[in-house]
Image (cartoon, rainbow, N blue to C red; front, top):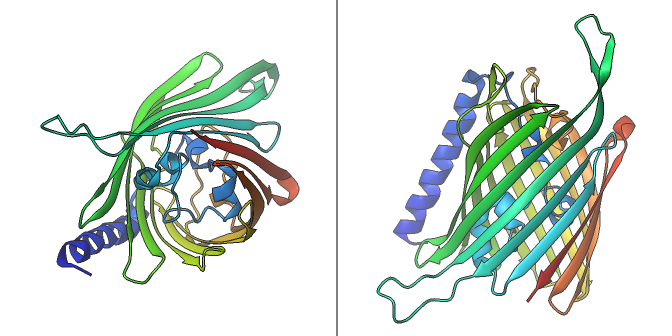
Length: 327
């Protein structure tokens, strides 16, 4: 392990620990835009959301933008998530490698990507201060993200994404901007990969007269490939303003090239008693103490379709279907 790599890993882990230690001093009760924590891609969810080190396709823009650097062809991905209480989440993403121009003084390398995330809460019942019914209204959230990643010799893969956010409840709207940062690198042990990601770093959004923090999250993860037929992954995630630490683990087994079977588990190992007052329903998995996920993927001719299933007890079950096309 060279000195440069040790410095980067050390600095990143120091930053991660600093975020963890100071999070209890922040306003955990004033966090919104929780739709940003609902995972993208059935593959990642089937692995229990332990995807920081394994992210290597267009969905990496959501989990760890550094993973975009592993893309070698153009990719188009999409997902439909039938969520809880008649809500749903839709996602479309596109990634494209940039070919270097040998005639340019500053040749361009790397991969660019863009995505749209849309969360629909359906029709909600409105009530006045006296709890009387005032009529129905709708609520929705949208995030438009653009990102870039490239491999830096001697360092690893670096990536960043910028999000433009809008939340709407009836006629009221809130707008915001956030940044994601990511790092990935193969370690000295063969087939072992490390990843670090910081998600939703940005200023407060303001809805009418109330300001609220974005769901800032710092993650570190490891992924290990076993003989090309299996992979295991482990993530530790710190949700800063919620003062919550989550450990997630996933296992993927591919008995054939065309089929992958997945299972995952996550648990909140450190959690405050403060609750997130999100403007969207607090239904993201991290508000529950623990959970499991499972799924499968079918891969043919550079294309794939994935499915994942996550039970939420009395709240019901969630199903995700996503596909990816390479061309």
